[in-house]
Length: 111
Image 1: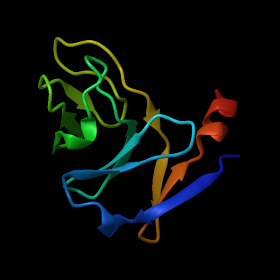
Image 2 (image 1 turned 90 degrees about the vertical axis):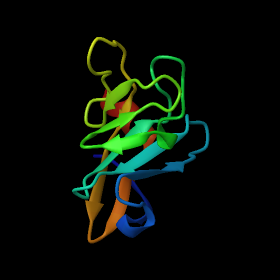
Image 3 (image 1 turned 60 degrees about the vertical axis):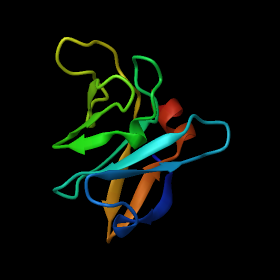
């Protein structure tokens, strides 16, 4: 069973934007909201040179890294096009307007 952490409301994240979450002992997490109000969460590092994905441009269900323009799929964390690499994803869901993030320990136990 996954433990979930309430990190705020859907309205806390602008459409086509992101916010970051810090959990003790874990890498920074970027939580993205797309134009169609879908929510995704990734470790906040591009697989290329560790650029802060939360500062990138969200388009469709992808984000473009602000450092070198790599496009990362929000659902899988995979680099798109001719680029290769993957950013870890974090389980996230929206429930009654609240954003719930999977507790990292629960994700490690499930692996």
